[in-house]
Image 1: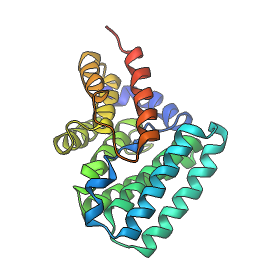
Image 2 (image 1 turned 180 degrees about the vertical axis):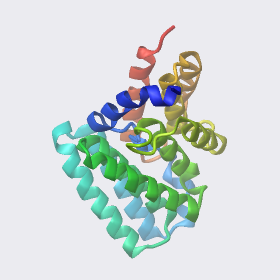
Image 3 (image 1 turned 90 degrees about the vertical axis):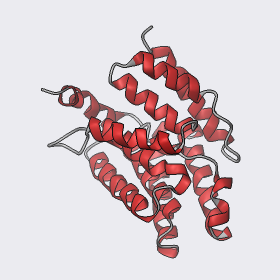
Image 4 (image 1 turned 30 degrees about the vertical axis):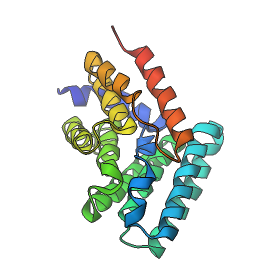
Length: 230
């Protein structure tokens, strides 16, 4: 029995009961200014709105209200994708929103949502793997180590590590790329490595326009650091 197989019952409870740190994921993005020139102004404005709303739901809304709010935001992103097909940045956020919706919703419906999130993120990579500084790699990596493995779902620690390392090669000093790498290392029992990654994450530069997401992520990092073994 592999370490991945041994951990899957706990991972299943994690998917069903807690927000997918895909919190995926989510604010898994570097700042918008680096991508604005490559995007239409209208799309960039909508993307910023989606990011802001995600952070509000994640870090300010009571947990009991989050699932419904994420579902509404996912529908909004799907509408934007229909209006602006082929936009990798929106495709990334479709995956992020659905992944966090899965964590907030729980139950068997979470498995359907994480599978949709994986499809969204794979579509984003097909469009532009460098979009938002490789955030699709971060989000996919987080999904692969947080969801159950076969036959329940698609969890796979080897794939998780590959995607998270790829994300770090693109964004080595990013708040989210380092956070999810540290969280993955902790899940693997590699707490000394996890501590180094998380302490580096706390030194990440602020992301313009992402103050709420940054503050929430830093608090998550501090809480995780407190759990690590010496």
